[in-house]
Length: 321
Picture 1 (cartoon, rainbow, N blue to C red):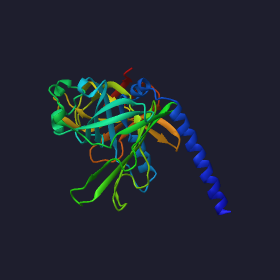
Picture 2 (picture 1 turned 30 degrees about the vertical axis):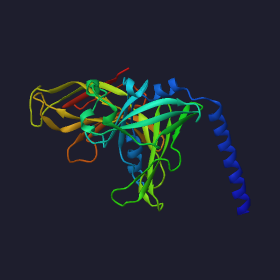
Picture 3 (picture 1 turned 90 degrees about the vertical axis):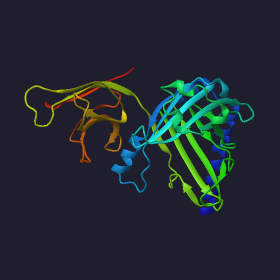
Picture 4 (picture 1 turned 60 degrees about the vertical axis):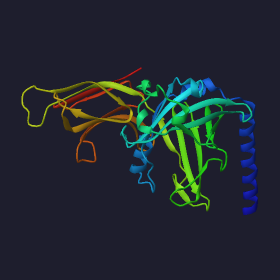
């Protein structure tokens, strides 16, 4: 019986794989569509929140990815500046790259070439300050041959992959060859990323040990205000912050007084899941030293406006269209 089940499973797997390959080979990926949904910012706050709530064995790193189109003719027509950081802190940058997209007819795919800066710090936030890229030349970049990512289109999503064992390097620490593989999925609302590495002996180097992708959701930005009274303050004197911008995947901002000094409070906007399946947008107030929020309100996840009033504190945000 076990052999029959194994045989059936193998046949079904081959059938599914052939159909995916046939569809991918038949349909040339739509570059315009892919680049339009690739552009933006993505964050896996919701995934990490759910894993912590459910006490998962392994918690993913909290990562935020920025994919911003830029003009850099020396690399081609479809160039993106990429910045990825951890723990909701834009200063904790763990990866900064330039991505170049082009059609690869032989592979029947969109090919992504990845460039690294030899001096990362010179180009931080180049999407906001494009003048930082002035004078950039090829000798200031490196490209790892064999580490290209190929994207195929399957219905309304795109799947990315590297060729087996093509991306590799010799570790300075161990002296062994390290093989890197990448598995990705992109649609209008999410990008899934699974970076993994193992050495020539097949031993784990990095990546999620359970083989689960980092599942990043597209962020939407909200703009609003925060007013609050200082502790012990009487009367109607409020500290006022205007033009505060947050994103809805765990965006968090420290509350400042009228002199620009930080208070012990922060405001956070996030989409989270309650009761296993109900997705809501949550606006919460946090106090330093306390793990849980001291107050929060929630609304539908697609709401365009959210706010709260605690008498001593008032805040409200509206979606930036």
